[in-house]
Image (cartoon, rainbow, N blue to C red):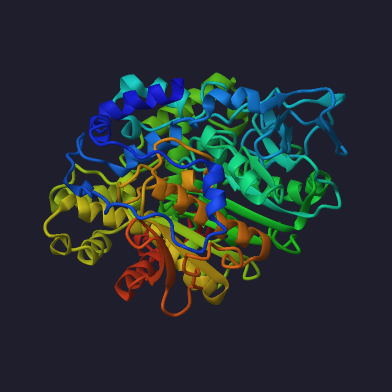
Length: 630
């Protein structure tokens, strides 16, 4: 309950908890009751019309039902059966199975009665990225003697910007209770495997690989909301679940020519986007070893939300001539978010180099060799200082164009057909993505221009004027907050999702959630879908939401297994349409339940504009490196 108490403090600081408790909340039926209803073709029970309160009317610092804060509150509350969690989980019994890999023998760490599955915690999938391996691509895991039990492991080093917490006195409460705690370390390249109790090498079960979100600067594989028990129960032992850690912040997303140009024979090169390399390395680990846990390496689905969804997107466009095929078959990018971070031409190179130079100054170093020799605390402090100072809506670090594996902006690569076309895709989003990133102090054209310049530092004045014309204030009835939320949502998340639909066209499905996980509260803000994906008797759930969670899980289960989300869908729900020319989408909300719809043409025009990357000053294509070669 400590986590929930901490978030209640955060909610109070935002002025929303008092609003929540003014109305009674309907708690959910049991998991078994929901499952029992699946055989019934009738729709779920009737509900009252949602008591929608326009979130745009909330002041910048509190009041109203801010979807961002509501989702944070929901995500961090433990399950309603928390008191029984200990009795439902057995730990480190001598009779637990041992999986023998060619570099380690690993015994199951826990057995979960609910779901009937074992979890093999903290399996090393790569060598510790420390010392000379700091900032390098992941290296093969070291041989470990004896039988490992998974009790030793860390989350990767993480930090949060000041603009997220707002109340800096709560910073450590938020960080420690919510975003992974203080048990973080550079030695963090571990993954967990959850496998059904009776799974064998011959089982060949579908595999789900979860990539967590967190703005590319915080998060961990085993954060409480990512408990796979609901998935395991829903599939009745029919899936193997994998979740990995990856490096974040400066450790995983330092980039630029200056950073990568230092070379020394016999020393590992620094690599831009080390975190994406970590993820790719873990996916190849799955290909090599997952059969030992009962999984099918030819039936792997990667899935992630927010930065995790953005990571999935980058894995879909990953270019590696040495790979015969992608190390996964299907992808579910949920709210695929990334703050535009260009590269490949001079202005972008200079921006990345400036970040690297500041990092060097914070450590007192002048070279990469010095950074690798520096103590962990010094690197951690520099990472903290850069991230904490991130302007509103930004995180300082994130995926960047590296000219090799990510040779261009993702939107451009999708438009140009430079992506893996053999992947089956199901994309998802929520109704109000931008609320989490919008600066609600914007109330004039000048302030909006400043917000755009901060979030799109390579944009020209002409480009920013075009953006403001695409989102005219009159369209939002003079509501500045609504304008900024709409702009931020499309620029950083929505259009990534929609353009994936355009790229994969007839081979993709798309759905949108428009309810939070608090009964009768709309619209859904960024992150609301996580509790639906991992639903397992969560708190603050109304009966309606429990059935919507069941429906979403059924579509996902069907897609994991067959590539068709409709094969095992609830009988009372509409089929999920393929994207197609009419931009088909399935909507989950509290008014029409689960119904098919489409994305309008005007939205798609704006999204195509964003995908072209005009904000990245495309007229200056000649990189500083290219000029040096002349």
